[in-house]
Image 1 (spheres, rainbow, N blue to C red):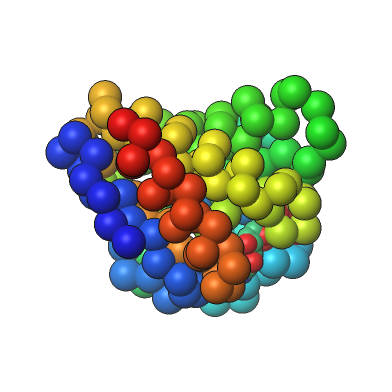
Image 2: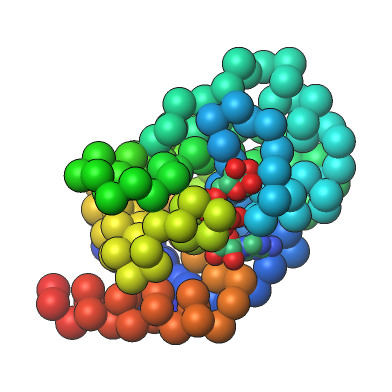
Length: 179
Ligand code: AR6
């Protein structure tokens, strides 16, 4: 499913983010930037050891709700933006931290003149963020950002499994209908 937000495109697809032909891909990392399972493991496996070497050389971790950038190693994407979403706790801060992880990733795109990025569904795997709520935060944060940032032409959510895709699709339909 694809919608237009001001001058930009917001798209949701089901697939594997490591295979995307796009300028940057987002990673769902941890604050130690230590690598791990889920999409983080898949990105480091597909991108090769150069990505971890660059993370270690440039950064001493990354606070929850923020993001750092590296090259894309062996991936088709030129950059990886490593965003750290919250581990779901049920506290009121979770939503702000999740929104901030997407916003800071988009700010890095603007700063580095990156006009297209693919995101996974941050925090909804190992970090257990409830999917419906997380999809609303993810989509609304991106739509808000695109309103003021036409330099970003394409944001694509690449959702790994059919259930995650279905929930994002339902949420995107609700948001666009309410506007
Ligand atoms: N392409 C797209 N999405 C994927 C892929 C892929 N190749 N593989 C998994 N996903 P998770 P989190 C989906 O657990 O919840 C790691 O250990 C997955 O199905 O990867 O933010 C990190 O190092 C789910 O929908 O990230 C952290 O310690 C989504 O990606 C921690 O997990 C996010 O699930 C972060 O947990």
